[in-house]
Length: 388
Image 1 (tube, helix red, strand yellow):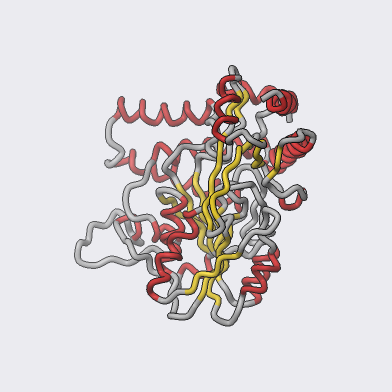
Image 2: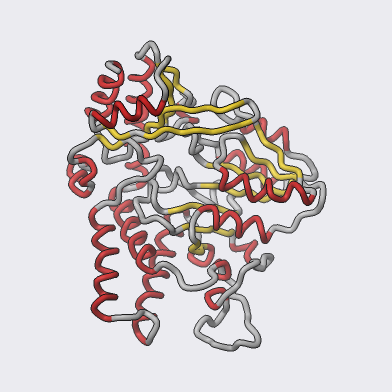
């Protein structure tokens, strides 16, 4: 794959070095053009709520649903669209039955989207076990040691928002299935950059969003629920899209859909779903395995360069199996925001990241290259950093 030609689709690369994909990736031109065309068509032809227009839009939804299912090796009926990752996770948490004394397992490298819904249930008697990171990673065996006969769910981020730690999903999936425990994965920082296989990793539930490595719009989340579990759960919120016959207008009774669509309450963001579909086709054309390989090459170069800078402390795992597209670091005596601002003056765009635990606050500079970045950009970033 010629990654240099791909850069023409990303105008964000024209005048700057964009290394903040862990916060939000720029959309490629075809995605923006698709969303614009959707609204132009609506401007010209009106509402989607009548006749063939509704059928057209439902076809868009079903096509994108199928593409997302392909991405994670799921079936179309196992995928629902939601507002965002937090919405998807809350929908999952709210359908799982539990008893006082049950426990769920999370970690201190997880994003609040996956932790807060469980923490809310503490006051009602749910035990929330927080696995603490060591050497900037969460050991799968520490999670294994925390599982007992009262464990209900193992929750994990595939890749940590904070420092890019990459968890071993296959190990945890086997652990969960062997212990009759649900396995919930936040794949926000991995889908589009790394291969995810819900069947291979024995994932029961998966949640994500569209605006990071999937190259899509804001405000569109995805929910995966394993087919064998769908019939067990009745969502807390229901609406016309949740029903078996969603064009029926029976106001006195309804029958829930048997697919993951039961988690879709009402009208969806058709334009964003259309844009996500184009983004997924774009990613498939480039090739997810090629993207993963490219990103890890850039990650290797980034870590190698940072390790040569005497005042830099890396806060991400160095082992390749636990590393991803996100690298977090600090420079002695220079605040992370100052580093970010100084780099921005030189047209190098990075982020900062913060987490707060019982041990205090951690804050670092967050660098996250994507497949459209180049080795020369990483080298220039390192050179510039060395002169701060």
